[in-house]
Length: 392
Image 1 (cartoon, rainbow, N blue to C red):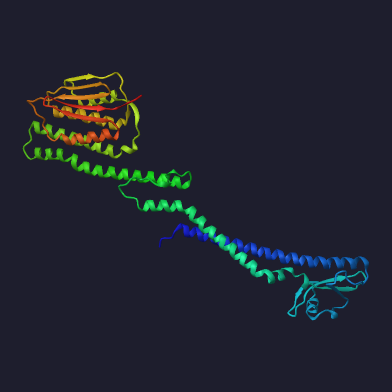
Image 2 (image 1 turned 60 degrees about the vertical axis):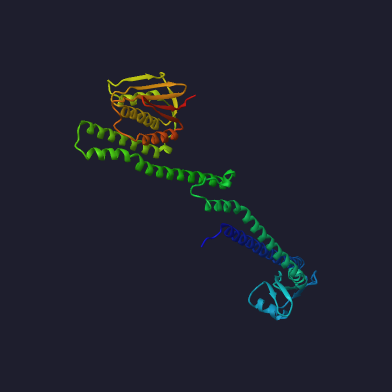
């Protein structure tokens, strides 16, 4: 069963409040009775000191105290205590008197018994008899006030947590992870911020997983179809080349998909894009392939080096494959735009159709590193324009 934290906090505060009230009430009673007993004991002690100093049997200074020379003359209730060997005692009787006894041994081996009936001094008992109802009403009123304050305090303290819990409970799976308590400068605000960030990261991971699953199905279907069609007939030299190209394309696609799935965990940096372009050309371009390159000596950009390299590799690979064996590849950079262009040999059409599926991957890579990419298809040339983030 769901238990509210507000109820638990209220019970704790209310229990602590009642406990404090009971403890202080008991402590006040103990102090009152101890003070009363100390006062009576002080009166008996003063009389005992007087008789010890003067050694005479004068009448006591206080009318409440009586002197007995023999234990037999003491009241019956007091004789029982003296017979038990007690020299100091407090005796409460059912008949009304409340005695305090103190035994005094004089130097001449004479024993005296100082007995005080302290009923007139029992202020605490009379106080509770006269104003006990009022004191009880005040105590109950204070307890009720303390319980009300505990309720209001628990409600005030737990209200932000309850709001956060309601927002989390009503949070839509596809909604934005934003909570009203995120602006607070306390532990609840920190919790809301971390919870919002965690939910955002979780949804981003789920989106990448869904995109990865979708792209695996979409992007690999075309090369697999080409390979299946090629294998359905006797292989010749063009067929083997087509299979090899399809395998290369599938490998590039898988690399891109995995890179996009891990894109959140790869930080951006400033790097030289010309170096990435040169590495791509060295790995993909044949020695006799026609190439025109007009790039600055250093091209500092901001982005993810791994994804940027995959973007350039795919652009160059697609240009070489779809342009045909006699196509010319050119790369230039002007006005903040990198242009990758390949001529199209009309006598040797591209061996593979459906280049649109490759564009989708390139668009996703560019979006992941916050670059822009545009495609321009013509009858004589195919051009890709990449706008990277230039390093300041």
